[in-house]
Length: 219
Image (cartoon, rainbow, N blue to C red; front, side, top):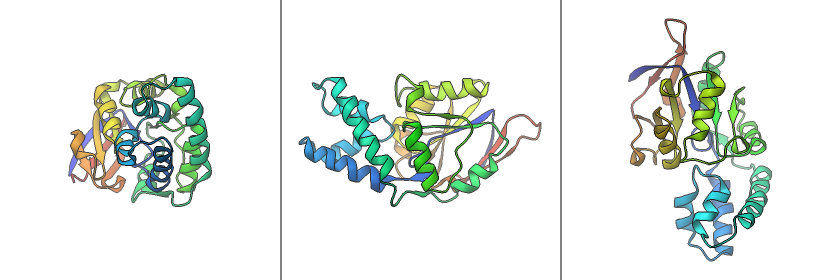
């Protein structure tokens, strides 16, 4: 186990707190087939990114206006289809432990989709939530994490991020933050620490009363 101090803990949603992979993969596979793209290639691109940015990488010659329009349709479908969306082990306890401590949700989902998935998973939305509407560039750009630090009034260098995807981990590191990688795909992105599930992250108010003491079950 490793214990560190942070001014704030910044949390990704999908794959970090919420298991939504079945819905995400089903919809993106269908989108890929409709556009003649290998679904496995699509799934290697999309995680952590906003949909229109993934589409721009997968269909580089297509106008961005079309990507934005199709992504709105995809987001609407994702918001409706919540069957199988569940909390990852330990996510509820982690959020309960963060009550009254500086933390934020930083997700590439829209605010509506984030609220729908967190609700379906039985998880409370943090008071500070940075969503797709709040940024001009999605992960792996660090903008979302820097905005979250600013909203919380803390130095980005004093923050710790919890993330599962390579794009999200890259964004946290690019923001100058330490990163806890969550789940089986995180090690390849070389986060600062690793846990199998959010249940491997334990929080408490720091002994000096400022910030958070974060203990990681190294996995």
